[in-house]
Length: 513
Image (cartoon, rainbow, N blue to C red; front, side, top):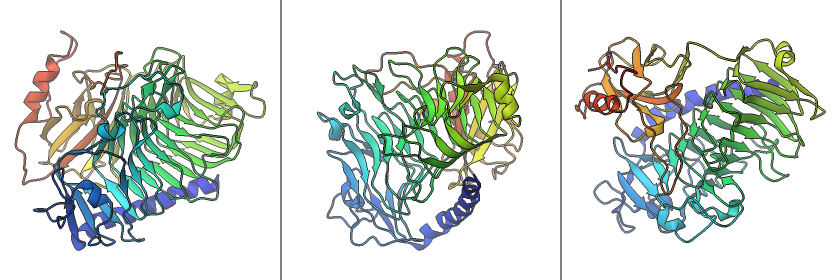
């Protein structure tokens, strides 16, 4: 368990280094560009950009420490896009979405008529992938063939990358599986927004968010401040076949909610375990999970009844799953530390005998340094600065009293009074944001009036509700000079008021202009 705690301090040191590098290195390095209309014979300048296939194939003019900017637009790939960028330790090659633009890699054509393919395949090392979008606009959500290999939508990102790999603030959605990673890479996945991935087969619903493993002898892997929701099955799945294990993970600051929107219904937000008992030294720190307050399906599972784990730390997490669900299920684990967590739902620990459950008051006496609630009241709000972009943060709101607005204290951020902000509900990330001028006081967030965007394709069910009980938001801001002076507040409120039931809430937007 001491090893788990060391990961936390190592992660803080790594974050500081990464932040300094991210802020200084691009100004000193070469700058290249790719665009939807680019060409392989171009020189990669802003005026003569490459196509994306050429840019990801490591053109000879790109050297460690350089940045390749993806200009805005849709990149319709015809086959799996392979990245073979080779940076160096301390001098990664960065592939990043151009500022104020939206670069979308659409793998619909690459997956047409195929099953079990990949959208973006990483065969690189010491490379960072930052801020762009990976998705599949294909309509297919139902297949007649059983099994995970019948995937009609593709793996969004498959990583066969080596050391020094980072995925930063990417947006991956409407694919088959968000991410598949099983290498000894020490990868860091930070700030990703992942949603609406998966499909239905005749056997069951398929499609996890992160499908990921790590062996005990490999370097630690870090999953930090990602948001995963509305996958057809689970959000983070840390296991596969018997030989695959989930060890040396730091899972910190992630948000996972309403996962399991396939025909099977709610599944699990966090899940690792298989018949293997070699899952070692995992730390889950300050994560936030949610399912609606009614219903019995949906949980978090740590190790399987046939396997087990050793060295498990749960600290600072919020597991709010309703009174009739399991908030956590821990199976055959030893050296378990559970402290400073919030639990709504059943808490279950099975040690050597899978039939002998420690639950209810016995669990609470065993782990007293936690908060246990059946019907919580009030609200719980957290604000997490982004590890790599100083003008970006995630806001998590549990709104048990269903208040119309929640005031959020932003004093732990570096947002100055007079900055223009945009607030996006992750369930409609590309929809109209709430925008205004920050006045140096608490920001009032409306908990009504947002409508989640439906998954792409033939999704034929109503999406489960999160708001007004729970909301996850992305806040960004900039100081003058502003490049966009449009007042989006009026547009947001006009649309939102039309979606609120009469008499339910008055959306005033009092802290913005």
